Image (cartoon, rainbow over all chains, first blue to last red; front, side, top):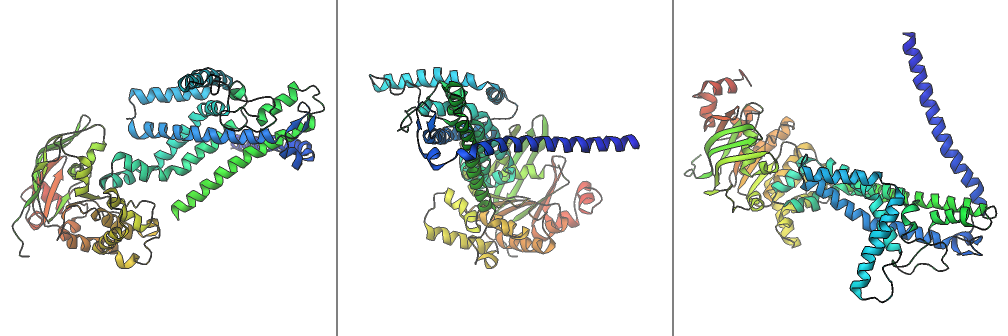
Length: 299
Length: 256
């Protein structure tokens, strides 16, 4: 009896410690960046381009580049992930070989280090696809076969594909069998049932996938290293074939490539803060849209 | 009731259904008549739902299902290779045990089927929705809130909505798989009343666990047991003077 109570006390103690430790870690991290970053935040910092070898000025091109990158990635990755999930969940029979191979590939993809994705992106998207496009279009100079926002976004989309597939599949599984059968019994084809009944009931899951993908990818630097990001860019990218600046990479540049690292310390804190806030904002926006859709759905 | 001559609507010949290695139905042969209500009774797992679901080929959805024998509707074998399953299901409506309104408005639930058939004209859709609701005895209760979500209806209303949704595509057969098993007695009475009204237009097959219900709504009754059709005939005869011992035991509640 007393050992039981002792064990109980121990469990409660351990849980409390875990909560405090996690909360403390989050608060101290956020606190550090808030304390050191906020004083340097200003409209100028947010709206201007970096100057003087990245030691002065703002980070607007990096904010712009990061946002655009994440959006293009979502546009590329979410539909492909959704289609894959639909195929796996609706069109293949559980337990057969082919979907198992695909699932194995997806799980493997999730475990690949992100720098490998960067190299893959360079080899496949930039050189193979981009090179092929230039050849096909008869471009004399390299327009597509060089690092670009599009290829960086495509690489990130490949990186986040497993996350999207898994969350969409979970959503598809929650649509009751009876609802599908009712639709089929009314003379709907399988595709009509998916399009009109299953997918509208899975929008929240699809958005969850997008949210997780954004959260996963907004801070990733390795995959975009070879595929589109640049050190410094005076003007904004003017299309998806342009190169771009990125908050995560900018942070890396500030802290390791700068002539005077100590001088850029406030910039580093502020940039980190902006990166975190941007990720939170994108997450929050998607969560907001999701909850709106959800309340609309049930009414 | 001064009934016209009986026309065979659905005719099963030696119909067997297998799920994997398990045989769920054993060479069933029976004729179901046009514009009559036929009840399928029997203990759980006896094959009555399997038979019902082979009339609109819902068993096709089960990957391991295999079917042998013939099932004719209006003289055409629906398991013939040339039959379009989607077209078949438009002619054979189905109402499920669990009411399954789509999470859309009442109007859109009923318009779902007609829209699949390519009807886009708003006036035409309005007419179909109204008629279907009237025929399913739901119109007076919902006419002021057609744009409200169907999820807000009561269980009985939802089930009548499902019936309205099924008849909106203008089928000639209605299959009902224990349509009242989740409903209270008042809602059940309404559905039963509705079934008697609907049989003027549709051939109705109803699976039920409720003996009284079978006796109240059906003209013919088929008793299934362990995948076999034990007895089939006029409901009155099945319930008052069955020719098989098993049937008598079941309808009098001695087993099952």
